[in-house]
Length: 143
Image (tube, helix red, strand yellow):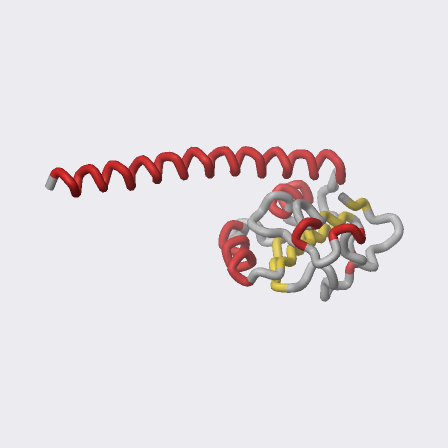
């Protein structure tokens, strides 16, 4: 009984530590989202594209900024990330997420006035290339 209690305490301590780490990560992602909003200055009603959207660092803040009349499309190569983000965005009807490769996105990028590729370059096959070639329109704001 004493051993089980000691093992349980170890597990609980690990959970507490992980929770603190996740809280830190969540705060960092929120700061990234704020920075992306500051750089891209999305407007209500705009269409935004987030390449390599992951769990939500940029897409959800961008979607909130564009409001219900905007459109926010996030793509990510990892099906589980897309699934989890879709769950997180269930209250934002302007959000669509789908599985696609950020380095060769299967989207009509010229339809978007704002293009984000946040925390993604180091995952791409050739990070030194500077990122995806989206075919985004010339006046699109990018970060």
